[in-house]
Image 1 (cartoon, rainbow, N blue to C red):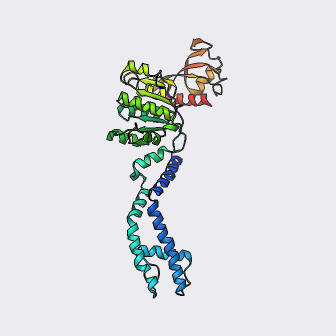
Image 2 (cartoon, rainbow, N blue to C red; image 1 turned 60 degrees about the vertical axis):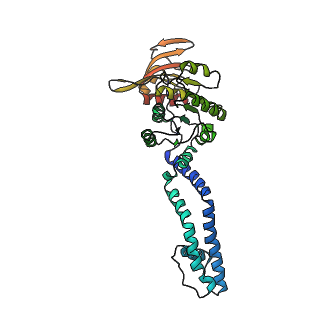
Length: 354
């Protein structure tokens, strides 16, 4: 059994998108800083110079803001001022449009990318990922990897996927789930940092290359010594051996575990894959009552009525009781085997952590 613990989303999607937009805007401004600095210089310095020359010519009607606006309008061939008599002011009516055309290409690119984030592609994915913390990084978005991502997403976990060459169909489905996907080589430290490995709670290696999985796992462990590292290996004997030698928490073969089980390993929880009974999806889960659990102090009867769940087994002080008595009071360190719907198990897990 492998319990999959549903983690409540850490941030509202709108707040996350706002943070990603701010971060991406700063990156975008940095990319176009030369163009933006030149444009600002032409507008403000040009406005100041045009006003000073106007004062020299005896025209004191322009305020600093008006002078800047006049110069800006000149750049786009929409001059908001009468053509002057002085030759030195007339030059602005010819120089500013030429400057505007020269800066237009870079400014247009900046504007398009600023208001259409999706055109940013990889940079936008990295910007979104930068808002994640205590998330799960999955590397290898093949069929198994996608099933694991889908399962983690279903259970409310924050997930970032890394895949150098994702299939179009899986890529579209992952994007539909709102999963950030970094299309890059995961063997590079830069890619792992972009995926937020240093802030992740777990890293799952799901590529079809055993050597690559192991190589990435070692690099990920060096970046984050606290995260759980799970590695997919086709050789079951090899998988059993490397756990003790490479600081890997779990090494699993592709055939030994299903996607829900792998998701459960990432969360250090225990739950079986759901089975359908009378049209209801039910799972058998195991939890341990924590010291601060809201479940402690409830009787079995109160627990079952509150959560619409069945306690199959109670483990206490090394003793196991099948179908414990309804009056039995739950206490810290008790182990429970519970039969219920996955969404109910989510509520139970949350209550146990509070």
